[in-house]
Amino acid sequence: MSIKLEHLESLQLSQDQVVTSGSKLLEHGTDWLKIWAGQPSLILFPKSTKDVLNIVNWARSYKYPLIPEGGRTGLSGGTLALKKEILVSFDKMNQLIDFNPFERTVTVEPGFITQDLQEFAKEKSLYFPISFAAQGSSQIGGNIATNVGGVHVIKYGNIKRYVLGLEVVTGKGELLKLGKGLVKNAVGYSLKDLIIGSEGTLAFITQATLFLVSPPENKQVFLIAIEKSQDMLQIYKAFKNQIEILAFEFFTDLALKHVLKHGGLSSPLNRAPFYLLIELEGKDSEKALRIFENFYEKNFVKDGILSQNSKQAQDLWKLRENISEAISCFKTYKNDVSVRMSKMTDFLQDLDKLLNHHYPDFEKIVFGHLGDGNLHINILKPESWEKKNFTKECEKVNNVLFELIKKYEGSISAEHGIGLLKKDYLFYSCSQEEIAIMKSLKKIFDPDQILNPGKIFDL
Image: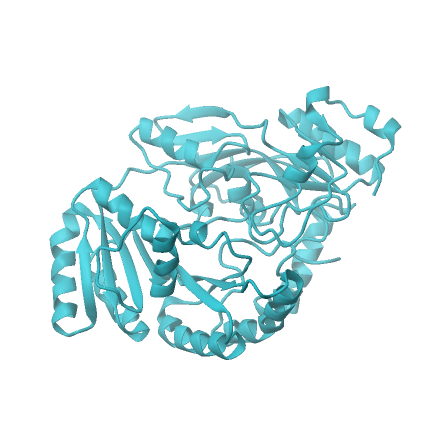
């Protein structure tokens, strides 16, 4: 797709808001997935809601497709321009608009960094509970567009729970103010919730009002080594029934091996095939120790350590959180899936058989948010394999994996969205009737198909 110069001259943006060439096109054309190399024709940097309205109405008049872009931390290709589309970057819409201490709400622009919101909440003695590895780069608009989860979903839920209001611009160039920041708002269809998770295919978010909560007290981390994956569910039940868990994470010894090899950390436990990382509040530490001791006496667990201070808690978290960084030097084929926690034990055993059968020559790194049923499956490319052949070999197994997900009534995408990566497999998690309704909604919000076309599904 080529942009006509006379059309570009009619766009009401300043010179610093339009990039037509140079290294920024390459920089903004890629995401963390690194499967595709995006080729945007240009990048637009709105600074206000008015700018977004101008961009959408301008693009609609010339039928130019627009791809919304946040922090580029996605893993589904949801913000890539593969056909010379126009990228709309929200980097310059990064302001905190309002803070209401009485209602504990904060209103921010879409480019506001997730970690900055966490730090702002902390300054106000409050807490923004959405936490994940990419929080230092990801943006709130992208978080909402993919209904991001993270490590604390087990207690706090996805970001959807905290979105009280949205200001958006639809593909028709309409400005909508949804939710109005109200906790209770029963006036027909919740269009606000429809925007959440829609990956920028219905509207562009220009402002978001979010609810903050009270911070947990004296967080502690329990790291436990176990021999058998089938014991995880029983351990989870015991902790969940007696303690309000903040996080319940899982990783394998192979994942730990890569983290330790990456450097800077050491394992405080005797090695075992599997590890559980449980975050809890300090008031529950004695109860947690009693639960652990009971399982230790029954030989369910091999070793364990409860953090004694915040520094040690952070170091234990790093053993889990540094996995993605530790394997980033490899070409990795990723899958982000989920099943109900009650089915996790059987699913893990079937998944292990599937991976070992179909990937006998590849390293398989599995970890995730066990407490909410979300697993990250990473297949590492051997040096001897060509990238193209490796990707093709991994893609062959998607249908087998997703059939297994369907059998367990799970989701083919737990927290990274569909984007480009999984749109051909959407039918494994959504019925044809559901997909048809989604397509109908897309046509209502975006009749000219200019907002993030080709993502989630093709029309």
